[in-house]
Image (tube, rainbow, N blue to C red):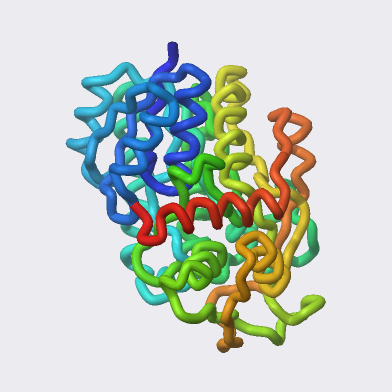
Length: 337
């Protein structure tokens, strides 16, 4: 039975991935500093699966803490989620983003190398493509100049991991470029629980629907898109989590370095998402148009063909599933965890 170390495993995508790893009979060690997560998510994952999760509270920038994990557990591979992840915030706090996301990843790889664990799945982002030259986005397209420090930090880590592989081909590395994760586990027991005002659209909409927040801000209605609002490729977190299990299986093939988009290939605008959510929750969503947000692009969606061909992975969930599952989570947990 393989043991997977999941950094940032108590977070939104991490907790859903841990759940699926346990269901697939992996042993899981979660390493998380809980800066934007709750240990409660892991307790619920254990309850849902009937299986234990080993949790270690620690920070990926702390090599001594990481060293302990590798000494105490026989780790086969790492799924690396830990990082700061808000586009807008990264523009305000670039140093924090580079220190956490870039230095933290270097520290992690350094400890992995020391313990001869050379299998890693990295949670990257479609932001590495920068402002898209053409759509849909394919993995063989050049990475651009990301429009914000969050995206740049992801691109820097991709570059570091690529250089690492070129220096030592014993590494097996899968870079997963996510588009926009939404939704929640159908049980309504785990979901996205951001600190403060959400940076992502879906929890923002759902918190307005539940009455936790008064009004949704729609950042920009003058983009070159059908209705003027930003278009994104929204992917259900359950589908996204499943992509990580497929990536772990890919590591077993010793293929070296691989890059995959995890998206649906379908773009939806902010206003389309609001309408779909209104249908799911049976309420109208109060919103106002606000100025464009620094670092945002007009449209971004994936060509998911490569993941389908090489990972045997396809997004299964619909827009209705995304909205209904988000609302189920939010209405059962109006204050989050």
